[in-house]
Length: 202
Image 1 (cartoon, rainbow, N blue to C red):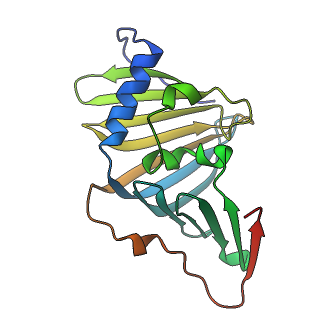
Image 2 (cartoon, helix red, strand yellow):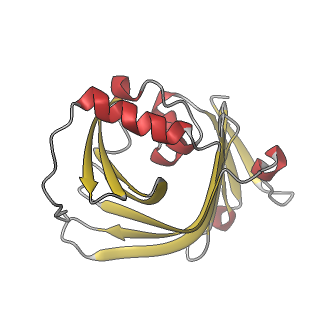
Image 3 (spheres, rainbow, N blue to C red):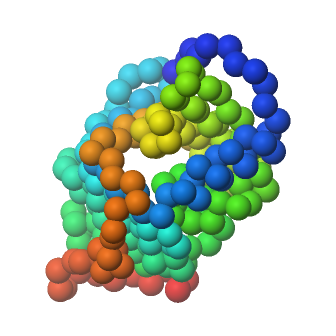
C-alpha cells in the first residue's frame, strides 16, 4: 500500500471537512478531463495502465471512456447506468442504486449535500493552493474502502481509490475544463447494432 506523506496541518472536524468538500463540488456544474489510470497491487507493483476521458454534468449526467488495452464506455443519466464493453460486444444497463451512486467519479455529477451521512471526510491543506480530502465510506458494502481527492486551486487533479483487496487505483487528470458548456446529447451511449443488451433489474 502506498504511504502518503504530507506536511502537518491543523485538525479539522469531520463535518466541517465534508461541508468544505461539498461546497467545492457544488461549484462544478460541468467537469471534463483526460486521465491516466494506474492500478497498483498490494505490494506496490503496477498492474495496469489505461488512458481515457470523462465528462460530468449536474444533475446526474456522466460519461466515462477508457481506451485500449481494455476499452470500455460508461454512461449515466442519473437513473440508469449503461456499460458498453466492445471486446465482449455487450451493453449492460442497470439502475443507479445507492451502491452504484457512491462510485467516486459520480461525485462530480451527483448529489453532494449529504456527504457526511455516507462518508467520514477529513481534509489536509498543503500550502495555499493544494487541498486533499479523504473519504471513508460508512457503508461496509461500499465499492471502495478509502478515496482521496486532490485539488489544486479548486480544480480536481487526482483521485486515489483503495479497494478491499488493498489495490490502489490512481487517476491523474489533465486538459481539465471546468464549467464549460456541455450539451446533454454528449452523454448518449453509442454502440453498433447487433451487440447484446442486458437489462439488469431495470
